[in-house]
Image 1 (cartoon, helix red, strand yellow):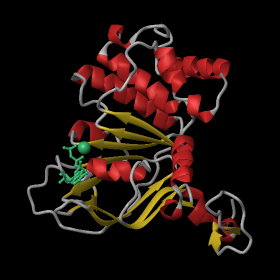
Image 2 (cartoon, rainbow, N blue to C red; image 1 turned 180 degrees about the vertical axis):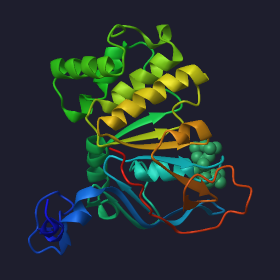
Image 3 (cartoon, protein in one colour; image 1 turned 90 degrees about the vertical axis):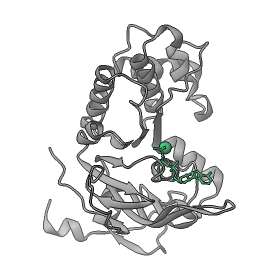
Length: 277
Ligand SMILES: Nc1ncnc2c1ncn2[C@@H]1O[C@H](COP(=O)(O)OP(=O)(O)OP(=O)(O)O)[C@@H](O)[C@H]1O
Ligand SMILES: [Mg+2]
């Protein structure tokens, strides 16, 4: 890598992923690393009365980072996760996901990008009760058009990856809470996402089980997955490389969850911790 490498220019990637030589040129370092980039992204629920759940914010998450979003109840965490997960569209601002400007996308393209790039884990496991662990994971690939045999093979691989290779045919009702959340993690990984979005994934687990689930998430991060962890739990946030606090719909770099001082509002939360090798 020479100093010159950073100044190589590439044609910007357009919405459809095709190269567009007439597009504005972007520096390699700009398009290479940012998996998530929010610029002035805000969300106002229409109401009535309207609720400004997310004030216009900036946020940048590099490829391979593990970021915790911490904040009290009602601060806007799920609102932010729904926007980042392309489950909702912001009412203002621009969201780039892996270099794609999602704000101009049609719904079908957003759905496709979500399926390609994002895995979700929630507090509730949302497993199908009458399907085995393997079937629960395999079902997530039906809409991707993956053939049945391949779906089952991927499901088995992902369940083995999260330590459930011995429970492939178990029904969710016969699994412990921690094991159920592992099935949900395996399901989130089935389509090889770049980003794992987690909304309080250990909220329903006792502390020992939670710890084991978090250790699995640590391993996924070590293997290169970008993790965004929403939590109000200090211990959970501690495991991330970097924390961003959300309060009253505003973001602030660092974990200020237990600060007694008044929240200093800022619309920028862009500082990036060095990646630990
Ligand atoms: N669909 C909606 N319509 C109107 N207001 C909403 C809607 N969804 C959320 N809100 C409001 O937006 C604010 C942020 O809600 P959000 O669910 O993002 O909070 P949260 O940080 O995830 O809270 P919790 O920790 O309790 O899950 C709250 O004031 C909430 O009442
Ligand atoms: Mg929430």
